[in-house]
Amino acid sequence: MADIEKARREINECDREMARLFEKRMAAVYEVARYKQERGLPVEDLAREGEVIAKNSEYIENDVLREFYVNFLQTGMDISKNYQRRLISGQKIAYSGVPGAFADLAARKIFPDGSTVSCSDFKAAYDAVVSGDFDCALLPIENSYNGDVGQVMDLAYFGPLYINGVYQAEIVQNLLAVKGTTLDEVKRVISHPQALGQCAGYIRKHGFESIEAVNTAVAAKTVAEENDHSLAAIGSAEAARLCGLKILESHINESGKNTTRFAVFSRARKEESRNDNRFIMMFTVKNEPGCLGRAVSAIGENGFNLRALKSRPTKELSWSYYFYAEGEGCINSFEGRRMLNQLIPHCMDVKVVGSFEKEISI
Image 1 (tube, rainbow, N blue to C red):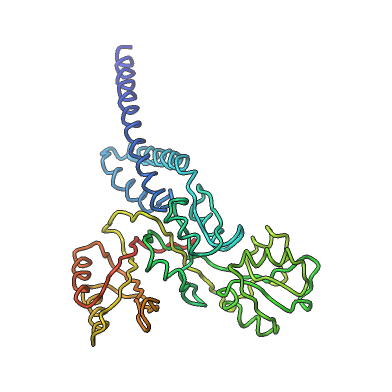
Image 2 (cartoon, rainbow, N blue to C red):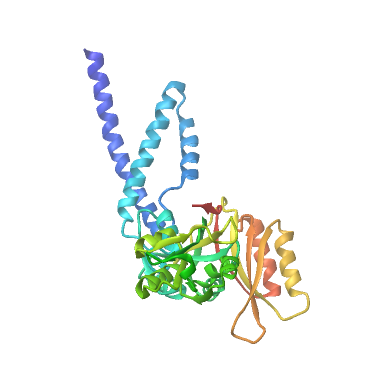
């Protein structure tokens, strides 16, 4: 009897201490949630969870107990994530378009605990985050078939927001029309210029007239409102469902691998991490012979792989350009700081827009 009473007292003492530590831990979780909300980061980070479990389980010397401790850690993480979701359930994510737009679908996958809010165009979504009305904006930066989204690149260069993550989403384009429409009745198609470009071969094949819209979901809404059998939209299956349209034909994009890269723009930059292996940087070079070549060399000579280098007009001076660069490597390292210092003599300005561990497919 004495032994069991002693054991119970020890359990009670451990429970009191664990309750105190639980409150202390959840206070830290609260700060993590606020950090993620400000920077547009999702609640779940499976890579981080795996690292923590692997490291912390080593504290247990007993092999039998270690298995139970792993379960204990996972339960604690699940509780932490649920608490974070409750805290940031009011997180607002801006996107360009109306419900059913591809950006809306992507935002709901990335931020299942937040609320997506539609904006009229890319700039409106971007400015809504700058003003503090929304926590972050999800905007497309590139399509695998139709190339860069120049408007968003310009916003990244001229604006104050940071990119804290890049996500790849498969885009399936469909031909949408009001119910009762047959394919031979369609004469015109309306959609975002990117979508029209992705489906250019299909449009040429059928001899359709192309009409540009702000985005694919707005195009679907226009078709529903006009109720004209000669007009069809190119957009998502979700847009068809929301607007009460029928899918005349699916997968009409020319490329079987039609992927759009979306970037999360936030007011605050995530903390520098040595785990980051991707960065986005923008710069302008001095108008002197060889400056661009030396700037590019500085990137490679410090061990960074330049995945993309693109130029865009600055719009401030005629024939003046800025360069958009995406690279592999940790820009938060000693080599990264050295590379940035070596760019200064050749560049008029250098702006690191963001860094992150990897791109994520959704």
